[in-house]
Length: 369
Ligand SMILES: Nc1ncnc2c1ncn2[C@@H]1O[C@H](COP(=O)(O)OP(=O)(O)OP(=O)(O)O)[C@@H](O)[C@H]1O
Ligand SMILES: [Mg+2]
Image 1: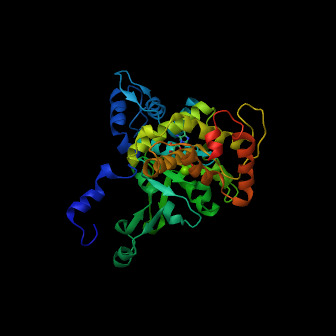
Image 2: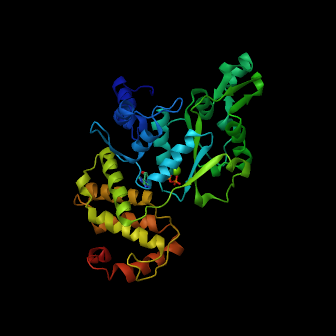
Image 3: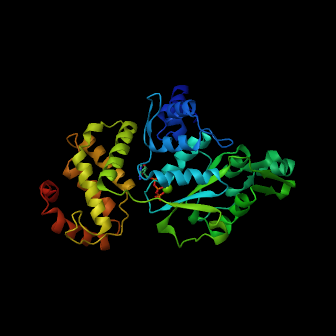
């Protein structure tokens, strides 16, 4: 609480229902409880659900009782099965792929379903220290009492080892290679030595790590082959078809509308379809009917970006427009996502407008905007 702030304000600030982005285990508490109740499969030690129930939580479906589980991830079932099966073994899981393919999203939901806690998270950065992966010290305590357990500040990975839970490591390849290697002992020996205390933490069963790394960052910091061997890598693909991608955008935008208090029906399906078509065409360098080659801009144009473009046009339409997303709001939001490098991308975008949008049936409003 800030000084001078009333109790009422403080309460409002910390109210869980007001959190901008509640944790997955909080948001889907009911689903997880119902899955656990009906789960007849065998649970690995310290797992809250059996592996098939975890997969069902991620992919959605109907339970025996008729209870409906919302799909979180749209895509290949096998891919999720491989990910879950990896976590049962003593190998860690590495989700890679281009930005915006749902790596972080899937990692969070996996941790929520398996351990009931998706918040044991280390964010990889280039300036990270080994302490962030292992443990640090509370220096006031350290000076007062010397090295002791009370003075030790455990990292989320340390806590996960003690609890037999899943730890998440975001953007693994942003971490310099020599620091990444601190993970090798943790993953192969399943212990974390604490030489200062002449002690160690032994990982409890159920402990594992889900790391994410995006392809485009590769080359900044390669993983050592010793570390790579300790991970099973799953590559997250872009959605296979327009239909699937539209469905993902539609579902996520509906969920976000709820959070941002924007009416869901302010987004016509047709506008999502147009945006996804444009993104897919620019990404692949060819029109969807295969009739025309086009140039691709430097931007990623991932599903995640399509989601934010639609949310953005929705906010424009609701607050400054006529309440429904139209060609004009869409275009305003879209340009920022497509043109990342004005020098390179502007001519590519202009060419696309003149050669594809101009002549496409039913897209005149977009061209005129
Ligand atoms: N196949 C998919 N199914 C469901 N949601 C998806 C899918 N692909 C992307 N998304 C959505 O895209 C958004 C962004 O995904 P996420 O942040 O996990 O991407 P990422 O792969 O971690 O990207 P980055 O490499 O930039 O960190 C999420 O809201 C997620 O719901
Ligand atoms: Mg991510």
